Image (cartoon, rainbow, N blue to C red):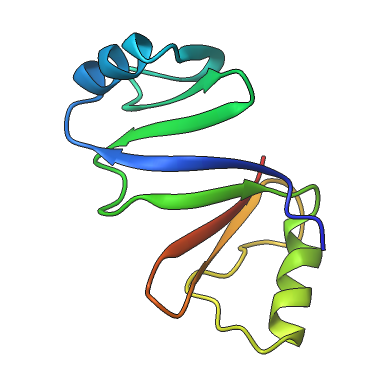
Length: 111
């Protein structure tokens, strides 16, 4: 099962301060992947990606970007995993969320 590109989605309190902090670590905002005004943005340092999200969710989330989130969902259900948030709709962009045994959220987001 191919999970796709991995990033860590961080729930931040002040996206401007967080952006400045991660820029000091060498991260750069990715063009056309969110903005300060939208209260979310993706940043990259080499092959490492993080997302900064202000007010969108309470906890940090591991995120994967599969090619086909619906096929992945079918595979997860077949293996008996409970879905916290199933994919909505039959085509196009979508996401699903599962939690590991310790309550860590894992999002699979196809855009």
